[in-house]
Length: 631
Image (cartoon, rainbow, N blue to C red):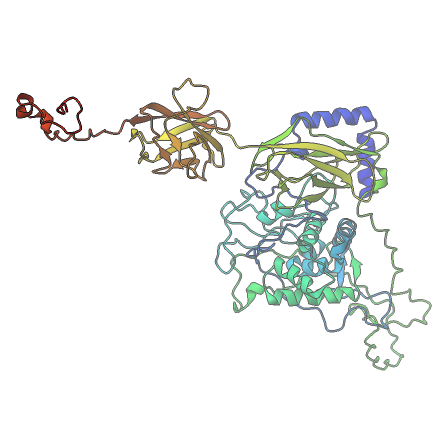
């Protein structure tokens, strides 16, 4: 497949100029590779890779706990010590062979994830165990040349009746159900999980849960989440249980995992056998299933070979053959035993066709000569929101032609709390057929300022493509007072009325917006007042400016007593201004406190004020020199 893809790429892009024009056109038109996920889809078309810290929610599972096949492998493992190297084709529900495309997808996913996240230690046999239990290896390998199932594999409606209750999250895009979600594809992802973990592993430009290559890669990344090391039993168990929360499911998957680790073989696509026992069959007797999660592909019985040589009448009946040793390949019951010494009987076994070399998991990264940014224009958003554009790069070879299937690692650098969907600071994305890779949705935190997103080729030391992203404060273009109560107080007291204002931006409530409050003397004043009302603060302060942040409903509230009247009567205004331009004035009236004049007591008459005193002479004083007699 990779060779064909390479031929298509070489044919479609023969010069650097053509590629440059194509990249420019895609960037201008916001081609599908450039369209970022919606802000509210919790990650959109996410591609997670090494270093990611996303964790499947504790109350969720990849499959929505949909039904699964419960048959266990046979007791005789396919390759015990001493068994033949060329394993026999075992038929029936315990089919040890894995269809060619399905086996290729598992091995490709293992190699890709080992290169980007070696600490996970993902074995392809674990994917095979899950694929066997979830869909019988894509319904016996019923896939087309690109690895897409010939018909959809859908689980039952997750309507809470015997299963989880999950309302529709994809508008029926994947599962055809606009009421409830259903598990989809050979690895049985529910749409909401696929939206986060979906991959384009076969380089066709689509993330399709019905494609075994895409689904196997996504399943591997999902199992490796939360820095799991699948070589550890505890992490292995947690990974499988995160896929389907059932102890029986865990035991069944691990049984097949161990079985495949001991040996398996490749069978042609479409010839695998689908198991028959499912977890939702329990207790149902012979009653038909009301909503089968998937129906097996019709299987074609193996052709029978007519007897090569009839036994002559005069020949003695041959003695019964001894039972074969446990390690010997079983014979095809449709073919009679033949005499290997008879030269007229051709060999009953055909020479094994050599298995073609496994297609490389990822087109050689050495083909990439450079990676170049495709996203143009500034990357900006306000705190807490998703950036409107995703950092996107194109991987090009020396001639300027795009290179598909290259793992690109995006990394957030700098002091910022911005994160990719799911809280990760790194993500690995595979380039599509156009050679382009876009990072997962990038969401700003609460920290203002700029930071850098770097894109590099995994396993290469080529110069990184860098993007500068800037986070600004949330904004509101309108600020409206809630209520119309007159605010008044007397000098020296506080305003007893509550003040509320609502912030909106383009008609939508604006939470988390910074609002500045100022006490001014008029609506045209250019600065805060130097007297009059002030905001209540620490003891002795008379601050006439303050800042507030709107709550989840876009409101700011100044409670009773938050404003003090001051000591100067008059008319003032509380001016509230939101980041983004919205403003409102609230009139404040300060009246002088009533004054009480102190009462004046009547004067007490003195001796000098009495009429008698004024009409009679003062008595002589012995101290007065003027009235003392002369000697």
